[in-house]
Image (tube, rainbow, N blue to C red; front, side, top):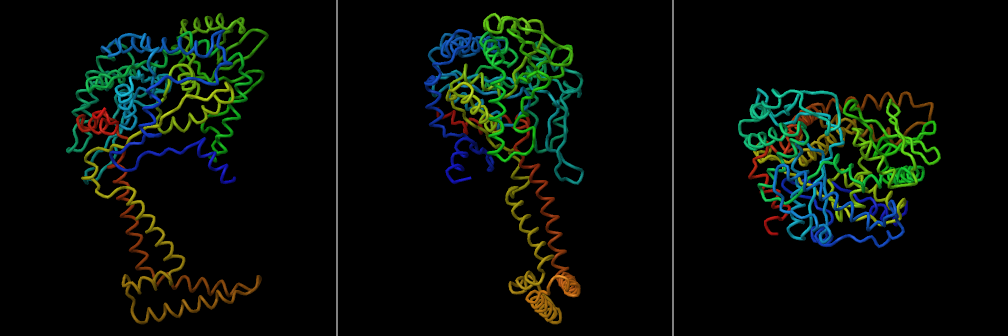
Length: 560
């Protein structure tokens, strides 16, 4: 690959990494650029050729934006009084979007909502956070630092509900109210004595009230967290993704893609392969599996499930004349008559949803729709930012448009006790560990050179006889290496080299043992540092005032 090709790849597929230093944030691009984007509506200069059910892209965007803001207002008003009260402002303001699964995530994820508020305040934008409730709820537990009997740190797993098989968040109801209600007490008992569960203790009643009203764990966790945000002055709306799919604009978008599924599948798979080559990915499932074709069926990037059968399965589509046959190929099948009559086909799609069939977009399709039809800026975390580079390629090739911009934002905020628990950073410990392992390798492979350096620096002392023997063996080894016999005559040479190496290693045994002990010490210290300095602990086990203060500082909300 030429330097020009490397530069082009880096521009098309930029690399994002979580901040390493504690209490720092990543905002890419810089905040000034992000505010410039969020201060105005995005205009597609190259979308005039597109039509969706007889509507231009601009007309389709107007409908989609109003539908989403209406849904977000309805959802948020169930438990709060949002500052935005009139959906008509959608025609004048930019819409900034973000989203995540409705879980107890770490502060780096929460930072996106604070950045949303920064853009609402500074740019007059509408900020909407999507609850990605079509993702699987795989675990109902959090990990927290805890103490072993010897005082060292470990991670404890504390469930907030009894386990069950993974199903989408929108269908996940509580399995055990006893586990749910006792969650704050069990977290407090697991945490080291110097930590407090006060934030969780005040958060949980809000979550419980929401659970009693909605019956859904994801909605309960999200509402409790959003209530805290509103109390802290954040100005965002929220809406579950499962509500978005019931809009007519999204139904029309879905029919538009399904009616041209063979071409969309080709573009999807070819862009996926380009992404994989650029990132040198070998795992067949990354970043996403290819869309398949089997026995006349085309796989589409949607999931299908039902409350009575909550297992997520791919949506398969077969085209017969003017009919779209939809199936999960596991018992459910329906058809849409008249696929060329887009609006009528969209009505049939919405009827399936009304009957309880969950037709849900996969991740790439979700952000594709939200960026193309709803938002002017989308704030991703690091993982989403990487994957949406693939979305950009698909949108450019399939629709022939330049996608609206994305922002990648995250923060690293460990628990405030991390420095007390382990003053040395994990990165520094790992650097020392690499150096020690290299030193051990040198003592094992070239003991004479390492010993001589250590003797010269005063790090190692040998008896006079040991030093003479070291010099003799080193000289003999050099002589043997200068006179390597031809192939077939090396038997005695190899034997002598092995004997010399073994004797040199015996001379270095004390030093090697000391380095091995140092490696064990550093490995143990690295394990403790990883636990102490982790950025992955859920936001609700941090001290609320401390954490909110850090997030506001990093998002520069107080200066807004």
